[in-house]
Amino acid sequence: MPAPDRPQNVYTLLVEVGRKSGDGLPDGATGAGLLCFATGCDEEEAVRETVAVLREAGLAPLEVTGHGSLEERLAAGERIDAAERALMDRAVAENAVIVAELTAFGREQEDEEGGDAEEADGAEEEEEEEDGEAGGADRAAPAADGRGRPGPRRRPQG
Image (cartoon, rainbow, N blue to C red; front, side, top):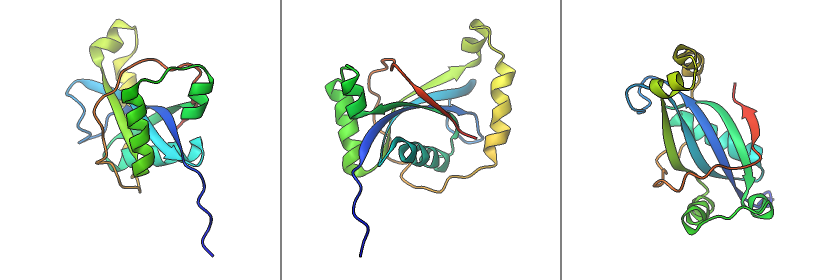
């Protein structure tokens, strides 16, 4: 008897990635932030799938911040515009991880903020040895708006 289907929710995740050879990030970038919409029975499953897809795509995920399911965000009073909602609906329809926005981090930006640009490169070697297992990395979507998200739940990836 097959297992009953568990309901899928769509979760909003902010993923910080470091550098990795062949990652496709711009020259001079020290990493990037990715706004993703991912499906899962719970947020932990959505995080695992997102990390696996990004690794399969040649990226080096360092940290994932969960901003909750669509229902949780609406209950918290967030307004979700039509473009963002359409990307969430696409993630559910395709049972996919949608990368809605990618923001590259550069050395100039870190230097202005007082950060150590060399420190950001250190995590690259550690993550480079790990390989992802899931497919679907070709399912990227065009950029949505870049509004900040309140109340993150941080999950270090290591």
